[in-house]
Amino acid sequence: MDKLIIHGGQRLEGTVRISGAKNAALALIPAALLAPGKNLITNTPKIKDVKTMSRLLEAMGAHCMFEGENLLIDSSGVNSFEAPYEHVKQMRASINVLGPLLARFGEARVSLPGGCAFGPRPVDLHLKGFEKLGAEITIENGYIHAVAKELKGNRIHFDISSVGATENVLTAAVKAKGTTIMTNAAMEPEVTALAEMLVKMGAKIDGIGTTTLTIEGVDELHPVEFANIPDRIEAATFLIAAAMSRGDVMLENVYPGHLDAVIAKMEEAGVQLDIQENRIRVKMDGIPNPTDITTAVYPGFPTDVQAQWIAFMLCTNGASKITDTIYHTRFHHVPELQRLGAHIEMAENSAIVFGGHPLTGATVMSSDLRASASLLISALIAEGRSEVLRVYHIDRGYEEIEKKFSQLGAKIERVKTEEF
Ligand code: UD1
Image 1 (cartoon, rainbow, N blue to C red):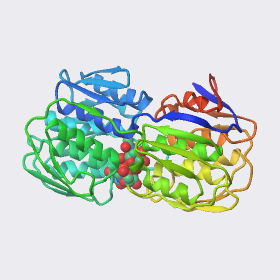
Image 2 (cartoon, rainbow, N blue to C red):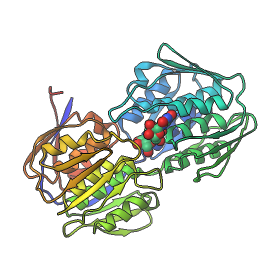
Image 3 (cartoon, protein in one colour):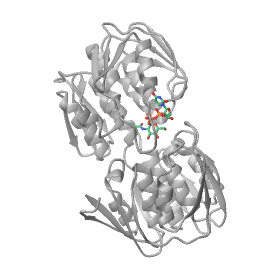
């Protein structure tokens, strides 16, 4: 088990390259199952979740291999339609293989993902979508068993906008007979990236980037090379960390258009941003303004940046309200931030953050991926020494995080520990 030791108080300066998007990669990799042969996904981050997804595909007979930043997936040898518990329990996004397996084999057995650190996360919308396409779904021994002799296009309306359900059902609909119209589909950039990869493979999809996707099923899809998008959540984490340290940092390999909601709020908070085509320079001189946020589906403020925003608001001199409408209980970072000296009160699904109380180093524990990011960036500005335990949560989604922050001037090192 690793932990990070941080000596806070350094101003972040320099250039950082943002990696490929974790959440997009976790949709693009399973899509390779649809097209037997060699698929290449460029700009793939070398993070734990990508490794977990690769291992899952390998357990089904695929070969996955990194060539630099590119992931080669040879899906020709896939001969199993089962995603076992030992893989799915490590990562909920494993459920994303269900759609491609159903489309390829007419059958899939995928372990039910359990709960997660920030509350119940059902998969009912995924299953309803597959049923609309003609699949018979049964749940037995903790597994979802889906069978469809022939998938048939249909109208599918999602009660709630769901990134995972949209992606999963889309990857089955592309091979269903006839037309599928998905309404209230998620339009997150990661969904758009998946749809674009599927079109490159030969799928027929209209309305990409909107909440209505119209899919004309095709019989065959062919392997492709596809460029993954940059990680907008990693980018937001570095933007916020740089502003918290009153630094001056250039982010490279970003799509500013994917970050509009975060950029608007940072500007409201008084951060200087110089936005270029694939780069953003972030500079902060004074004390940020308290700035409320409410998370929402894209293009709203992402729930995956809620924890980091709470950390940022600790640097203000006033009160701000951070509300999460997507995951109402996603606030495990709050008691840990309080260990660093944060003044935060909870009111249902909102955190009221009171700035103006300097943070001091402490030992804190990661509980989930973005919670750990918020602890880390807070430790970077806390006075003195902090330890962030259970770094494996950070490693799920951030590539070489301590190296990237060290290059910007942070004092941070990774050490092995027996502590859990
Ligand atoms: C994805 C992201 C995650 C992000 C989330 C919301 C990946 C791998 N993960 O997760 O980082 O925080 O989007 O932007 O891409 N819901 C249901 N039934 C379902 C599915 C979802 O009720 O069948 C609910 C969820 O509990 C949640 C909301 O819908 O309240 C949105 O969840 P969803 O968009 O599905 O999140 P994920 O795809 O799991």
